[in-house]
Image (cartoon, rainbow over all chains, first blue to last red; front, side, top):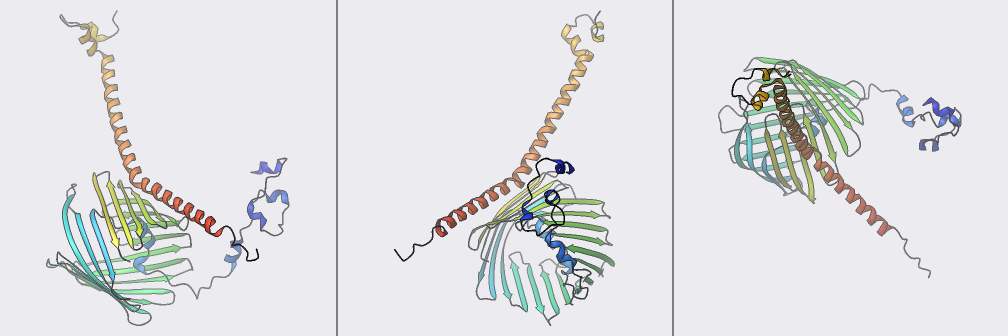
Length: 333
Length: 92
């Protein structure tokens, strides 16, 4: 780089120079040294530690990475139709025909062909949200989100099944403060949990959680932190169940985001790293990821028309020779 | 005189080809052939994995980026067509 100064012809100045005012150094060096970026002056202003922004909820700490790296892959046909009856009320019909994987102990994957129809009703209000879903195999899913006061929110999540002892329900109480959030959870099987997250600087927020499972006498404590700027998000999560999870998402441009994820499970000595991309174009959203388990997946949502989306999902597991391809359509908003 | 040891062990009735296939040179050759077969098989497997991974990860991306480019070009074209020439002035 230094040899350019001795060149007979001075190099042409970079285009940013056109807007810079008078420079302290002479015109010869100006072509070589990068101009001082204007943005640095903005960061000189003092950080107001009493006015920090509200942090992201604790369970959403990894939301950018999860959204980019874990799309809802499926195998078979999926069709969703949402019909709004009112400004707040809507009905949804959903058909799924395909294979579902049953977790098995042996290395062989067992796929069970299933087909079901799901009917749902949604009521959306700024203060109250009610969502219910019923399936043909007898499962009922209900979610309630209610703002009790301005800062206190109640969330209920329930799932009832035909099989005995498989139903579950969970109550969450969220309190939002000016720069912190707390949550208290009560679930069936005597599950109690609590978490707390606090903004430490305008970009960094840290939180902790504890939970206690009554029936199995298990308890755990975890710690999470998230560093968030305009262009990137980095998170770290450590739990006493032996899980360490790191994730990093970089927003390369407003259409493209690259995400990476690393998870280490101390109990089962399991390490997984995955890398993915997320392209948000005008007509489609394409997410692709490659895994250290030898899994390659892609998920495409293409907008065919106003309100009509075409879905394609592909997942190839090279190690277990498991190939899953699905297509679907989503009609309605 | 013969360099290969197998030729020296000639029994009665053995041909030159049988003796050749017993020799050490032939043994090396067989090893090389198995190695080449394994190499070909693993290259084939790697090519399959690389090909299907490319097909799933990269081909949709190329297609979508091409569509986006086409849409951009169309919009640019329409912009220059519709917003280009100024409306004619009323004083004629």
